[in-house]
Image 1 (cartoon, rainbow, N blue to C red):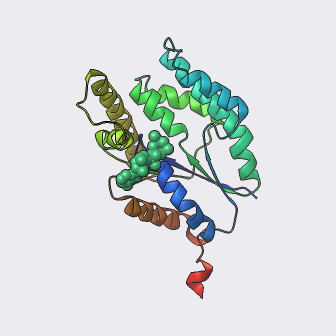
Image 2 (spheres, rainbow, N blue to C red):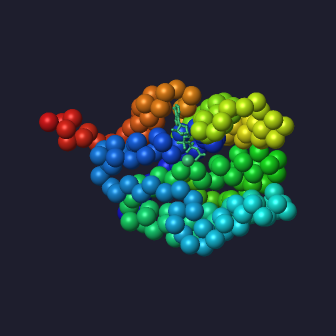
Length: 221
Ligand SMILES: Nc1ncnc2c1ncn2[C@@H]1O[C@H](COP(=O)(O)OP(=O)(O)OP(=O)(O)O)[C@@H](O)[C@H]1O
Ligand SMILES: [Mg+2]
């Protein structure tokens, strides 16, 4: 039996990981199939080696297209080693970031262009697309502020400003994707308190999964 594939997307600090950690037991309680939560590189050894290359601070000379190709290569291996085998077992696979992240970050943020990045990722994934994507939307400054909350507060310097512009291009690309594909991409306001974001995501999942989202035992008693 073929499984189902759902992704969570959104800018840095939107709350993807927090929401997914809270939602996993809820989802598992409502669907009969196994639920597999993953994120790139997802423990695939080759994917991890590729990511080490991408993230190595010594690789300052890395070209934006090289970066995009490496992300696509890492994604390919994760797809083949982790996502497809879980889907083949009938699992509901939920992935924290997928192709839309590359379109937003490399296509929009690094300004390679959404179309070019989508094309290289269609090659990498054999055109595979999630049936549902929950996009957690948050103003860039708010998302960055969440991530920086643990750091000492200070004025934005020139580098932070560049960072903000980069992240604003990322968000604009996500919003354009969501507008272009309203059937697949459902937007949730991630600037709400975490509990409300979790509830909103649960409602989207329930509506999408329909009959596959069953009542919990406790609710039917
Ligand atoms: N709705 C919320 N309100 C306030 N703080 C939040 C909310 N959601 C998440 N946070 C906090 O913001 C920070 C970033 O959250 P999280 O790591 O879940 O985001 P993310 O989308 O997974 O980010 P990244 O893309 O960097 O992995 C964490 O410290 C988390 O506790
Ligand atoms: Mg995260």
